[in-house]
Image (cartoon, rainbow, N blue to C red):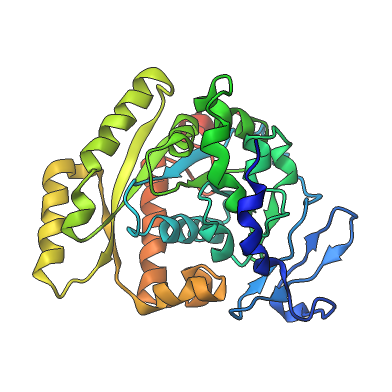
Amino acid sequence: MTVRGIGTWYRYWSRRSGVNEHHPAEGPVDASPEGQSAPLTSSPIGAPTASHGRAAFHVEPPVSQPPRPATILTVANQKGGVGKTTTAVSLAAALAELGFRVLLVDLDPQGNATSGVGLRARVEAYTIYDALVEEGDIGETIEVTAIPNLYVVPANLDLAGAEIELVSAFNREQKLRRVLDPIRPAFDLIIVDCPPSLGLLTVNALSAGDGVIVPIQCEYFALEGLGALRRNTDLIRAQLNPSLQIVGFVLTMLDARTRLSQQVVEEVRTHFGDLVFNTRIPRSVRLAEAPGFGQPITVFDPASRGAMAYRRLADEVLQRLDLNANGHSQEHLQEGVG
């Protein structure tokens, strides 16, 4: 069973104006399946985007010391509109800015994380769907972005049927882990953007992850379901992934002028204590505009409040993971490896 037909209407993403035009100022180029460069082109909304296809791209691990498997962070919350994709994209860009080799895995059929870094979610593209359902080589799905050190495994509407197609698969909850294992030594961090549900895709992400980051919008509706998410996390830790930990809850869309936002902050801190990140992501027009230009906020407006907040969040995440600037834990370094 395949669901490629449901994305027919989505094909307008693959229509590009000025296909033969080369724009060197818009960033680096991808490698096409034939080994020829594919220039970045302008999207219908004015964002620089890279043409898709099977990328002839392989990341080499560092030679200075034995490769350490990447830390996998899952950004999850079953409620929609709380800033999951913005957090995944912006955090990945902020970590790449610090010199970490970061792979952003888009596990949402909407493909917003893909477009958020300037790539097109074409129906014909080789995506995470092919790696998960059709058991393709995930190394061939990796796309180069215009942001140094940041790479993406894209998603498109094909992924919408993955949960149905994986129902009969053997060890279906561990598919993503098995897919990611071969490429983990090539990266320092892998960040997975989840769909707004607690379905099989999210379960796969939590089963593959070392830690989970939970964005919480500073409104009361966003508090609903957090208990269910934590219970599911506990179940996955007990049955599928003993190493899974909650790295932290990040408060998003904070409007410091309102009493409501402050009450939500207090409520979250009361229930989750030190698991709540000190960094709070403000409600920002610039943050809302950045996806329309296909850029993370750290690139779109590096000096904005949103960009500075996500840089501080990246620092907090690194502290909680105990990673240094080379992507290695202090424990790893103390062992004298390398």
